[in-house]
Length: 316
Image 1 (cartoon, rainbow, N blue to C red):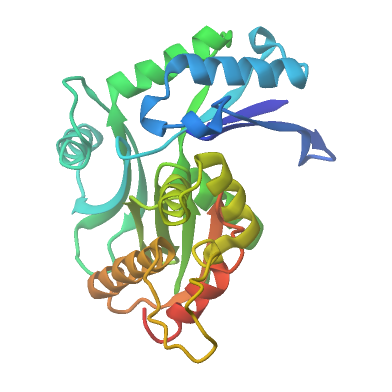
Image 2: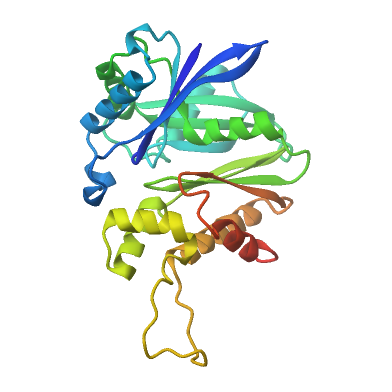
């Protein structure tokens, strides 16, 4: 039995896996909001107590005793986490560790505590002799301690494995779809506080980028445009999707009036995707894109997939 927790800003997700004929199977799954009154929700004001209470409620609901959990995996994400493929000289283990530690400090906001990192040697670089490609994941000791303390306050005796969200999502796709034989696959994970673009492929650079456009920002713009509450904006987003801004018309409008399309935050998201993938193409000129997979809390917004697909053709 293995338990996984995704500690998000909007929702906590918990899953318990078992084995049936040596194949993983879902035994329990549950999610819960981190905030009681959605109209006062602010991801910047979330405190540890919000997460602790939500996870305890989930454990109680699905009848899980945290003290008895022997194997737990939890996800770490956000701007204080760096996932980056780098090319470096082939060297012994000690030298490589020191080199990667120095590299890691360039990519995460330092908070005065030690860099915590892990790495995986992908293999020899195909372009430069004597160099290797390494996948580096780094954060800070302060963030790890906070995460560890959170799990301890819930009652988990063992903190288990801390997984980087981009790596976890990539592994999920590899498990279900496999590695593309040619070209590059792209994942867009639309969270509540930020979104993440992930690009990867066989013999292609593994690349991630955080976007400051997400479900929370969608709601803020819908609130402002329609002069409604946060909870009403959330409901409207689920009901109308990308058409949440087209809910009212001026009485002076007629069927023959000429309208100027207003650029929305969904258009901004598509533009950021295009910019990111253009950059990827410039740094990896031999790459081409196969499919773009959507995941995260806002992945199923009505019209979003078509908007991205329409703007993707011939423009990325």
